Length: 352
Image (cartoon, rainbow, N blue to C red; front, side):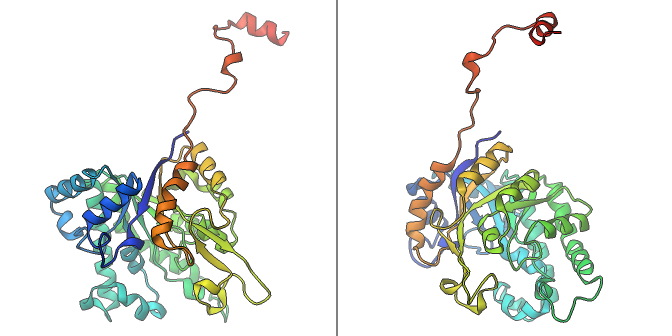
C-alpha cells in the first residue's frame, strides 16, 4: 500500500488577469500560503511555461522547477488537456475547438492537428527534463458525435475511429515512453476515452502501449452513472494521476444524463466542490491507497455554486482529511507470536 501525496491543486481554473492569479510566482505564493504542497501546471499559456523553449533547454527547466520549489511546492504533473484535445477533433467540432489553437492555425484543421502532436511530444520531453513520471491530458474525440447515433452506425465505424485515434497518438506515446513518462488520459465525457470500455478499446488499438495510463476523476463517472469505485478495481494498475473533484446527479421527470441543453446549474448532472456532491471520497481514497496507487491528490475546482477561492481554501483541508497514512503494522501484532516456529510445531498446531 502507498500513502497518497498531497494536497495539490490544478492551476488551470485559477489563472486570470488579476493578482495573484496572473503570474506563476503569484499562483505559487497563493497555493503555498493556502497549504498546498504540489501544483499541476497547464502548458498552453507561455507566460506560465514555454514548451518550445523548455523542450530545448535543460537550464530553462531547472530554473522553472527551482522557482516553484522555492515556494515549498512540487510539480505534480504538467497538463496538456487542450493540446491533447486538438490531437483528434471531429469536423463537427472544428469551429468550436478552433478557439484553443494559435490564431494562425484557426481554420486549418490538419495543420492544427500537427501542431498539437508536436506540442504533445515536447510535453513528454519537458516532463522528463523536470523529473516527472506522469503527465495529464485528454485523448481528443473523433467518435463523440456518433456516440448515440441516428441512423445506426455503419459497421466498422467505431473500430476505424479508434484505429485513427491510436495512429495519431502512437508517435506521441513512443516519445513519452522514450522519456520514461506515463501519458495519463483523463477519462471524461466528450472524449473518445470516457469510460472503461473505451479505455480498453484505445489500449488495444495501441497494441497495449506501455505509456497508456489513466487520470482518475470520479466526478465524471457520477454524471455517467458508472460505478466509480469498481472502476478502481478494474483499472488500478493504470491509475497514475488523480483529480479530486465532486459532482452530483439529480435526474427528474424532465431531464437526465444528456442535460437537455441546459446551462450547468440547471442540469441533472453538475460538478461541485469536494464534499458538496455525491462522490464517496472515503471509499475512493481507501481503494487507491489499498491498491498502492502512487498518485498526487490534485484539487480540480469546477463548481457551479461555490467560488473558486472558497473551493481552494476548503480543498486543502478536505484532501488532508482524506489522505490515509499507510500503517506499518497490523492491528493484531500485539497478540502475534514473535518466535520462529519450526515445522514440527506447525504440524502440532494443526493436529497433524
